[in-house]
Length: 410
Image 1: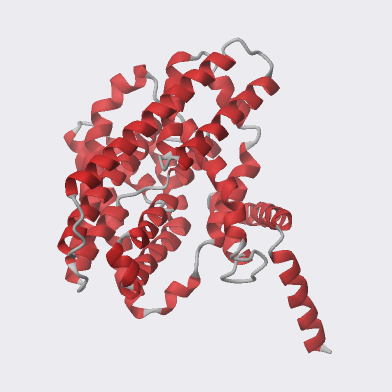
Image 2: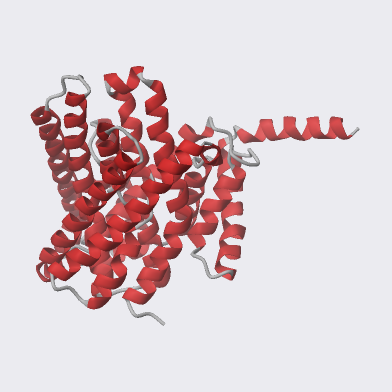
């Protein structure tokens, strides 16, 4: 009898686990309850959202099937586009004149500090230099989504938040360039015949094209909303422009993240409606953010915890990355003569890691050497997935700690 009930329940789970509407619904409900539970133990709600996705996903209960990942991808794209627009909207010329130099200095120190420490640590642990350098470049990536969600949740403002937004935004552009350069050099060393000039120039063109497309979209958004007063009109126009921008960016293999940031920056400097646009988008943000982080949770795999090699290399990756971010920010802020609170706490806000890192490591599959050497490719991917698992769970609480103390919130 119990076997019959168990079989029926498994059959029922199979029927629902591939249904996209059920998937979104169960992720939202799971996110709500896990988010409330996280807040009760003084953790950010997004930690609960991620845990909900992990529990409901294929690694645990399995109510969300692996095949749903592709179907749920549009939610991730929309959420990231809105998050990037929010970051960009903080880049007014007035703020940039005030913080621009220090943001660039801090970004460079933490970017290269992370790269050097992760690469060196993995080489000492026995990983080949070329592979260690590739992972070092990937380690420099930071996930802006968690940082933005926590800042919005706490309603934090001020110089600390401005610096955090700026460093997170520049970090992604720097990471893409660094990865392109390292991949080209490593590829040449591994006998792929990759051209450093070609690879780096392609990355520069991608970044510039993304920024130009985003700037144009921000100008269009300004023109279409500057005389609008009704909230529903602003919401429809803004969401439409954001979705088109994201689709065009992805179609032409540009960075939707950088494009949306550029759109937000241009909009912030042209439109008096900037705050109204962001406030209007806030009305759809809660369920979108909850679904986004829950979907990220479904992609995490506890299976990476079973390999001693992955635990060793992944542990070194996580610790060296954290040291690079925290001490890199500290040294950079000292060199830039930044506020003591920025120097002390901003590095902890750089620890979350997700989409960009996963995207870069999966890009290795397109390189001839890694396409035919599946063992090393799988090892590198699992090391990054282990880091994402740890940093997606531990990163948000540390980011919240950074924002609370760095912004001197009660």
